[in-house]
Image 1 (cartoon, helix red, strand yellow):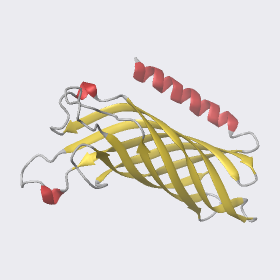
Image 2 (cartoon, helix red, strand yellow; image 1 turned 60 degrees about the vertical axis):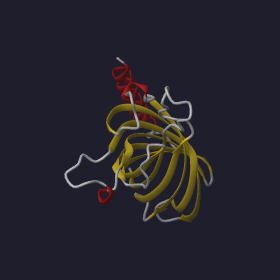
Image 3 (tube, helix red, strand yellow; image 1 turned 120 degrees about the vertical axis):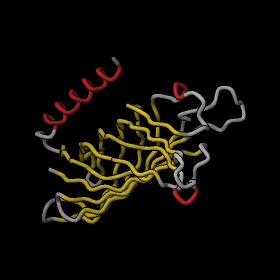
Image 4 (cartoon, one colour; image 1 turned 45 degrees about the vertical axis):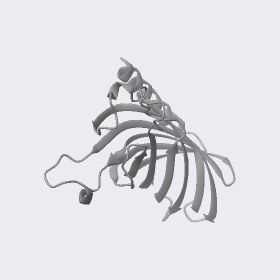
Length: 205
């Protein structure tokens, strides 16, 4: 039931975006890239888990060099044991968390290009709400997968470089400021926190 409601909300947002982009000041982008992520607290280190980061972005120019942006993304996060640390033929520790992310952030732009009406560079910061769509867990640190929180709240900071009025390369760092899991039977457990780097290409229509 929750998934159906969430899907309906996403459809409503997409229809609203389509209407908004027809108005002055709004623009729509298709984005596609990948996450390199880890989970602090699960005894696996390194940004070794690769996953998809793709969806839609809508931006609005609120000042001469300032944009307000909203995104709706399918985002895969988690962690994985480095291959060199796993025994041959063993089942590697691996956590895959599939989210739908809703980042909202402000971007400060600079290096304006008259031809094409765009800025070359920019830095952005904001927050993201994530809803857990599904999970695949192979980690003895989690005793009951039902204790995994079904949402996440993250802070984000990133930069971008635009090659022209359509194509932009974006790099972003995000981390949770809530625990997505904590062992209820261990008061000393630090809990799990998502960390990730994102690299992607944005195409503005």
